[in-house]
Amino acid sequence: MFLSWMSCNEHNEDARKLSYVEFPTKFVWKQEDRCWEPRKKGFSIGRIHTVSPNLGEAYFLRILLNKVKGPKSFADIRTVNGQICPTFRDACYALGRLEDDREYIDVIDEASHSGSGYYLRFLFATMLKSNSLSKPCYVWENTWQYLSDGILYNQRIRLKSPGLSLNDDQVKNLTLYEIEKILLQNSSSLKDFVGKPYPDHDSVSSSNNRLITEELDFDMNNLQKESHQLLDSLTIEQRSIFYEIMTAVKQKKGVDPIGSLIGFVYPSIVENAKNPVYFQERAIIAPKNEVVQEINERLLKLFSRKSNHMDYISR
Image (tube, rainbow, N blue to C red):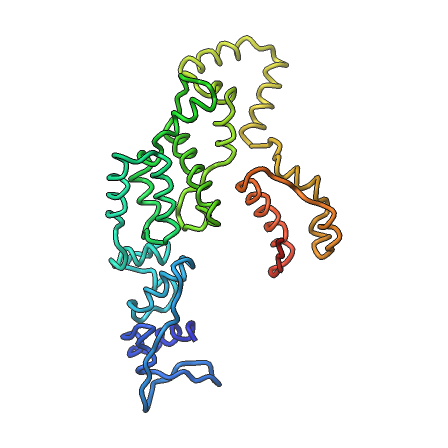
């Protein structure tokens, strides 16, 4: 029915004057032919089922269907003033159907004068959970410096390194990690919000390792000079080994710990996907929710390659 509406717009000029919700007032759906035909008599009021904001793009598509007239494709629905928006959310925003979130930025700004960094991060997580933000990424970019309050201090205490320094990307990543922990405790995740940055867990693990952090806290210019001096002192054989190692590093050929763990505990998992005994005899115990989530996502990807439809049962 929905796709036939767009097909009708391609060849019927009158159809292009109507939005999807207005369409039944002038056209009638012929179930046997599965097409729309001009209404000859009677009257009907169109309606669209309610969609929860939690469904993301489906929610914003519903908003557009009450506004956009005569689209012939999904790209047309996302087109505003001749420009195709990447998502339905962006199209709603460009049409002025969503607020600019300025009031939420102001709330975090005001709260930063008296609230702790943890309170601000909890406040931001609450805003995300309530689906109140039109553009979470926009709010994040304008408030991350408030939300990261205390992150560097806590890292210095955790690693017992008073002189520790972190660049903006490292601070942002650790801040996102703390926000993700709050969301996970409330059965949610940053991955649930389209366009929202997600923390790099490998970088977080490195940041929480004092030795790694100290090694990364260096003067780039001095280190580059020292690197050239050491490279010049290598023999031909040593230099060959050096380049071989650096090539592997650049190509990211290192060991994947979680992948190795899954392969060890669940050998031939795809072939045993329908064997309940196979899963009853095996388990991976993880200390943190974020690790559990990453393991689950890896396993689900393995199953999705095997079949387009699977029933997952958790207990």
